[in-house]
Amino acid sequence: MSPLLKLSAITAVALSLGACQSLFTPNLHKPLEVKRDAFEHLKPGCAGADCPLVNIDTVHFPDEPQLDMMVQRRLLDLTRTSPVAANTNSLQEYEQQYLAQAPAHLGSYLQAKVREQHDGLVIVELSSYVDTGDTRNMPTPGRGFINYSRAQSKALRLDDMLVPGQEDAFWKNAELAYQGWMAATKVTDQDPNFAKAWPFRKTPNIALTYGAVILKYDVNTIAPYAMGHIELKIPYPRLNGILKPELFPGRG
Image (cartoon, rainbow, N blue to C red; front, top):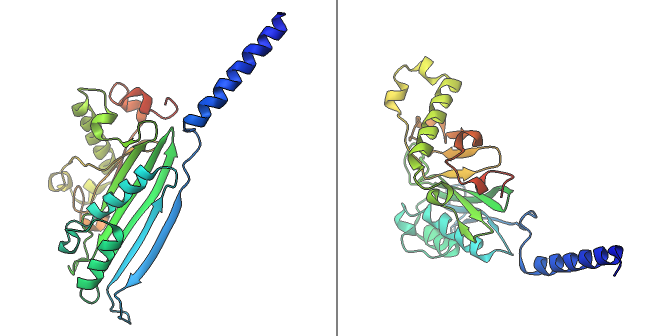
């Protein structure tokens, strides 16, 4: 066989193998299809501005049913502080129970949205606002993230993200991000005791976004309620040797 024919044969085999592979493995560079599902319902038989309501704005993943179920479970987790939601197993069941028991003026708002997709990761941000009748209308409990790895078909926890033994180093970098946030917002200029009144704390709300690792805080955690949900950002270069190498954008 001539060298040209041999090269053509090798190329054909390689293309054939690649085509077969693509039939059985997902293309992680192609974003997952996302379908939005948003609705608002009032208490049945009620009319007027005082009616209790449930507003749900969520997402579905037709090609990733495991993630679809995970989003529903996590949204329900955000309602668990309410006795109404203690024994509900679906968003539909939660809606029915909340509307059946909630008094006038109250409302429940749940949202799930795709914040980013990159490197085979789907970053879903979840939020809740469950009106309990408190005069300050404090959300309970607030925010959350799902860092879903399509390659592993699971949500990544912090210990899945970090090189073994590097958790303390991660939180030290998080505290540096907190100090940087205080300097940028100049909160200590207005209140010299701010850092003492609102010390750094850990948070379970961590997102592997493309630009930085994000830490999000519920209100009244590291800052007063009026400042809302604080986001701290840790640049990826600070996490060399701490974050698993394959989770750096562009390396997966």
